[in-house]
Image 1 (cartoon, rainbow over the protein chains, first blue to last red):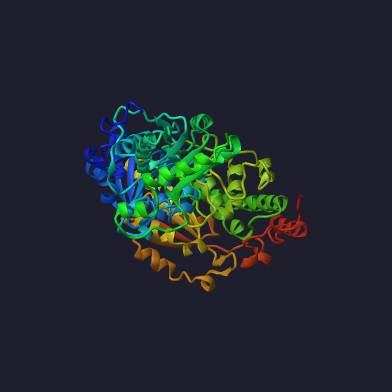
Image 2: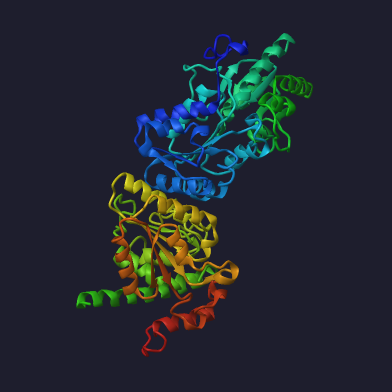
Length: 327
Length: 286
């Protein structure tokens, strides 16, 4: 087990619970303290996105654009063109959802270091329902050349990801969740954009996950161990650029994969992994994600269970894919 | 007007004519592209590149340069011509427009050609970028000005009005927008497709200072830009009334020339028209 995970990893009730958006909020303040070029733009959602912490600390570097995500993208592109490092914050359904073409033309094609913080991604948004549960945002972002795509697994990693993104000189998308989720990594856990983290070594199956569901992957691995299945768990926090080396080395060892994400199966992290495997090391794969469906209202737990995104579904998928292994 | 100013204006008018000729030649070689808009905007581009802009063609990333943002990227051929003629790159390179491997892409790209400032073509996103640059420049107390050229057709796009609201709210006095009011867009007349009038009242309602001028009269246009510099409380938009296809009477006002390039016969006629200034000059050197 990775030594930088929390001590009481499997006692969920004892773990600190924080939404990954909090990590973004803290990370962008830290980046702002370090560099005057950091500015934060928001589309009338400063508190829900946690951009308000930056607003309180650096009011002169906070820019309210109103409910206008398309304009927010273009204003940020202009500011980055001048030499600022803008973060644009809203819900992922609207940014990068509504403003996708503006991001494509004015940020990615211009190759400008605008950072898109997409909060309220996934079904765990809960009661707000399908309109506000972005499930296609990673697909939209990972097909754009120049764009970096990160989906942090907990609030601590989100803070590190935000800080790292501030200084990577690239257009970057950071995917964030609304709901509190377990904080299971520690400050000492190294974070490097594009470098996947092996959280648990194993030989029978590679479980590759991103976002808060990485914790479910660890829970699944724990259950599987009791049934004699030795699972490797990889936190693939960066979906683009993809850490092909770590993925291929793991799957070469285990011979099968289960991917886990709170996103459409089509076009998401699992698809990115499948592309690499199909071209380099064809292997049996099962994908946990939302299967061509919109979300709906409910509690986060109800929805994660309904869409089969929790550890029992992962355990089932592992058993299924192991049977398909070529021996 | 003093004699020096009169000389300058004459030179600018001659440059605009030369640029129109370059434009017809390059569009003929490219075999596709937009003709009407670039011809209509030749006078404004001559005014910018040879009089208004503080810029250094040999140092396109000079930090204190004025920024000229072209929102309606499809008229880029006339920008390319102005850039070549002012020394950003050799005039011969104009022949590569729209060809494989060229820096002169069909729609302009910032990463390909230093000096174009932004990538554009998809309409409606230039004003926001210009406003973003202007906002950042005011944060840092920079003196340079930001100009944003837009078409009238792209005023249909919602992004424009979001950006107009932002610029009005933030009193971006260092931002001057210029609208090419030629009344045509790709499939017809602007007032048939989606009426814009009163476009002046719309911008005034968004807290902009509005100046209307003849965009094909270089002296008047330069005067309008000067007046915009004196407005301290608001961004300014110059509604520049232009004639699409200006300089070649047989295609003036014809929206069918919005999105096509001349063929060989047409180009020959157009170039003759420009070189003789409609028959006013008899001795033509080809």
